[in-house]
Length: 82
Image (tube, rainbow, N blue to C red; front, top):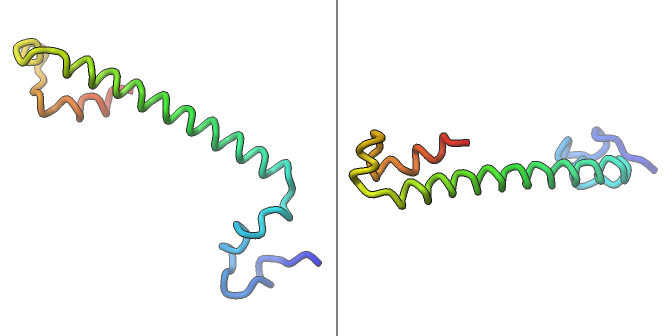
């Protein structure tokens, strides 16, 4: 017996998350692959930002001043570097 969202009582739409298997294996498999690719992309962006941050941290204060960045601004600059 298949229940609809309206039949699930107080949980409403939230219940659809808990009863996802009735949607089908293919949809769940696609969402897992989609989640994996977004995690992979997010990790790549994080690594790129960390590389920029590490490179800027390795510069001296004089070199940072030459390019117009204060040492306290390195994190902010690295966040915009993707």
